[in-house]
Picture (cartoon, rainbow, N blue to C red):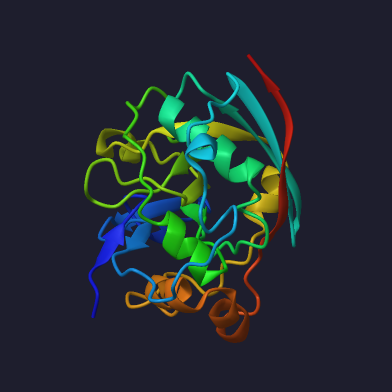
Length: 239
């Protein structure tokens, strides 16, 4: 079985005290990115074969992106000074329409909501290893903050991100550099379907290996309640 790699350093198992606040019981897992490479061959298209020019585009200093989802809209503001490499990649992906029809495939209550695996295996195959350099951590992983997921090796961020549901500042020392923050619609993010829980093989949720190989066909068939991004749109950008 392929080794699972972790991306948001702690698919925390949580328990709830009398206050109702989630408290961590263990940090044995992390938002994980799969190791396997999808077997489906690529075919030409702007997403399946992104140009060097598209991959070199620099983001505005401040970038506002609106996400229309199956649960409702939310808006993220990204700040290039927080994480230049990460915000540039975020800008490129949104501009090319990469996130449209992408599932929130790993939503852990009291921890984070993860997305960024494309629903077309050919597109995912083209992007999963187009990694960007690491950025230093200059902001903390607080509630509502948006951060790139990564493997356990340096310079491995590509397309997957997560939105923090709580203060996950323990991730800061692990190198998870935030790129922005949800400025409106956090209630929508809170409401994303989470009952599938942790992904396979640790839990009963989606397998990243199968999601990579089979795309949305697999996710729609076996996890039909997953929420998804209808469209992500750049609202504004300022230098």
